Length: 463
Image (cartoon, rainbow, N blue to C red; front, side):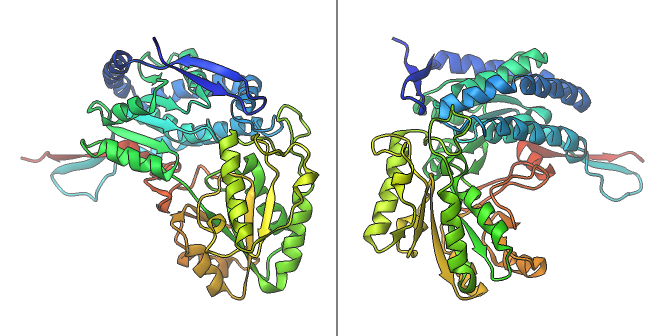
């Protein structure tokens, strides 16, 4: 009997998608096919690959309305917000196509009489991409598209929560006549995903997910020589300085905490506020949070939808309850949000004060709509608390003093420092984390380095 995956929609709890899981023979066939197809794909000129992939992006964007609706049904993002993912996909894809000729150009050392020397960037071979459900296209495109641009073949394993995303990728690539085998997807069990990553035909693995998942990737690839890029968890902080534009900080931090029901690795989860602005800031965040509308993500008036599943919502409920038991206070009355109910994935957004770093809510990843706020007396205290974490993905500073913010940013243990914004990936900048937030890099011209290897040419032409 063939094993299947079942996608339970958080919208109404029904089975939205059901697909058979790939067999061992199917995995072997896919990898052999990818290895063969990759050689021919890599032999094509870069401009030809980019033109073909540009047509695939066009085909994908043309289906925006259908794809957005599928996102809502699969993982619960409000339909008013889901189209933004396709716009973000388009922005990142176009940027990577545009920067590729520069990023992949040969490096030419200084002239040496009688010699021709260069370093070329050549593809690794077959890349396995393991993508999550929370931003199913934005996370996947970061690896899938540059890997293909660089001349690799890609095998995508998407989350069981968002399997249609893998199928939409293939549909777009096929419509643009990307050669068969260059891009494939596999619906796999956890065990077979590990088997895929261990296979010697796989030259690199790009993984986005939990810290425990990253450890599993490291274990799976340790027997061979596959590279691995890991984008893992976050507990991202924001610091609101005394000189901040408070209205802007309130609006931006609140959105950074609760967009996508807080299910973002780089969402704001802990906030440190200068003592002189603390009361006003907290009042503003609570007032804005109370204006959110929790409900069916199919309703265009909904601004915060369900979490991906009840178990995920229960995990956030447990962190909040633990904090309250340790002396924290919750400032949002859940009864204002009629859809919020125990035993469902519908969870009201919550703002906590009286928190400290002994509480899980300020230390462990909170993948949901809850945020803790603390008062600080100085920049030094804020930096110490921001760095007091096993994670280091992004950190946001709100201030009108850019020079001071840069100096503070230099002291932060993080992959990205934001000033007066948060929870955003600029495709021109390297996306990377430190500590338990991962290793490696995607986006920007630097991101191509993880998907290629340097190959040196040392020619003596005068003999």
